[in-house]
Length: 374
Ligand SMILES: [Zn+2]
Image (cartoon, rainbow, N blue to C red; front, side):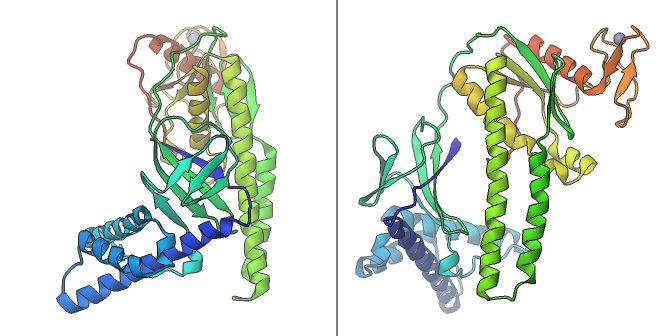
């Protein structure tokens, strides 16, 4: 399964989609009210099938509700059912039953097999209207669901979940393989000795966010000034995300043009976070790897992950000697066995490359990507 996200063009027509989202919110609230009433009357849980057939009946008499396709209505009922099941299972851990949501804050509706159709170019038909979206990439594979989402700024996005496409054969165009080591200051160190610095503009933009967030919390609750400050804050967040994603895409293209096989260490994000603090989440290695894998797949290149417990820093890339211990603060060390001087990151990258190279063609390549949404 792969999740693709597209922005819809601004258009007057979009109000119909927003109305559909609002109607979904109303239906959702109504379902929850029914659940509560049913429980009060009968002292037991209203099951999903019953709820669905009841809502379907109500929908027949309600023009506004008919804005939402029957598929999406079913999805709402199922989601609420899921939320209740979670609550039954984990109420002791503090999980709350689903609650009412302000319709204005309701975010999305989801369509499964029916209710939409992709037309040629960048057009999609939802209900009986055609909308256009920024087609940032091809939609390959079978579409499983389509979700229309409203952001806090009121913009609309389309989230498409597709089945995985079969992997294309690896094309060896450059004949080059490389290993990479992630770092904080230096984003990537390559086994060929080159390195890619972390973009400073991202760090600077963090200050802008801090400022915007301060402005927001200072404003009077419920005032239009506060609403303006909130929008400003959300916009700043999105700017940073977009800038970062742009940079990731560009970098991924550069690297896949330069190399056929790219080797990385499996990330232990939790451990890294503990060691390095919040900065790591700003760099979002996981997000980068997802983008890189996607592009590599398209170009027929290969991304390989090697076991994170392999001592890539402690092993001398020249002779294979393994140190007992190597403190994090040591950036360079001399091998006691062959006397060569190893730069910490470059040495690690070389080792990662060597291990990756030995696994190519053996078939059983260990792969693992941290689960981080793009
Ligand atoms: Zn050595």
